[in-house]
Picture 1 (cartoon, one colour):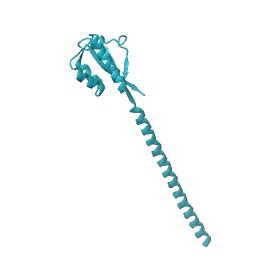
Picture 2 (picture 1 turned 180 degrees about the vertical axis):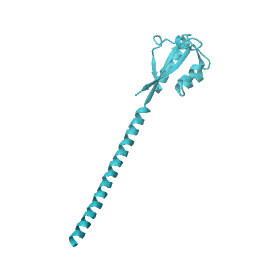
Picture 3 (picture 1 turned 45 degrees about the vertical axis):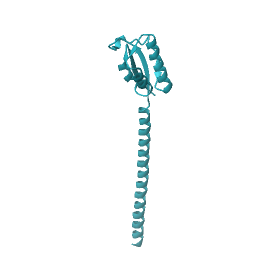
Picture 4 (picture 1 turned 90 degrees about the horizontal axis):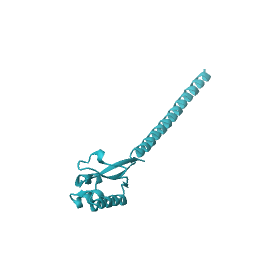
Length: 137
């Protein structure tokens, strides 16, 4: 009878130890799965938010119709950087000097291109339009 009690106690202890080991392994697997999911989500989020902008100046008609914008004629793309924005402003100023476009408010156009949203300057430019292009990196 004593042997049966010892065997039952050993089985009970072994079962408890096995359950504890399974719970520990299950917890580690669950933690690893959560960590992997979070890492993948962070990686995916970084990829999704890495948009880069560029701007292109178009000569166009007074209504700024898309069919009047010629990508073969206006094929310079300006990066959304400080030097790119300065080059875009220089392009607009060159078009004004060449009498191809008219500007309603030079200071406002300069501010929009250099410090604001360059596409906002389009409303102040006659016979010219600035379009934003999105590049996914």
